[in-house]
Length: 333
Image (tube, rainbow, N blue to C red; front, side, top):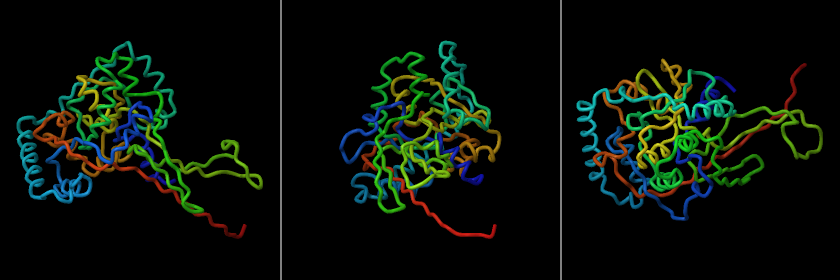
């Protein structure tokens, strides 16, 4: 695996922008409806991306008048222009608190988890209580039913330990996965969770694979993993700002329940080269906007009716196709 593949694998290992928290399969699978409500921020460029979303994903979107949506987007975009003056530098004033002593012991447990060791072994990392409202966001949508289910799971007035385990669970999600073999060397995996993703290829020793029967001794295996991210509530700090990288639905559920600060794992980067390793490509591509703009989109915008709108969207399923090639040939020894 080359450097680019490794960097991508590390970023994808915890770049969860899905509705997954420490939730059961029942919460993840939801009901049998073909559509669901989604909160979506308007006014963020490009306009064409919003129009395509309405046309392709909103129920009845093919019949929506584009001019009406363009007008709504323009009004929100103008409002963001006002916020650049009235809330200039707001992202730089995010409040970061030390973890209360009551839950610091839980950090030691989290650091011993293999998921933590794999994901956070490159840059300075800390655990802290972070203000939700001033987190910078790059994901501009949240699925309403998932947020509501997570609100029901966390309950009112969660204590510190419950809050820590909700944000930094010791176990990953148990979402159901459907697997189909569609050819001699083709497999399709599918899940209702958008956190569903590929893992980095790995070379395995024969004794790492059990209950495998074949016609003779095996020298090694190549594993092509499919599954989920690390499931942590994480942020990336650059300068005085923190970008919410993973856990948007948990953050929405907490804020809707009245929680203002939450335990977070924060990675600190100091330049774009480091950001390319730690962050999703969407962040890297527009990093100057998120970390230098006067007033980038903040998490509290999801609760501002002037820029957040609810849409009825078609449900989707994440599918991953795995194919492979095997070649035999001889070379001079």
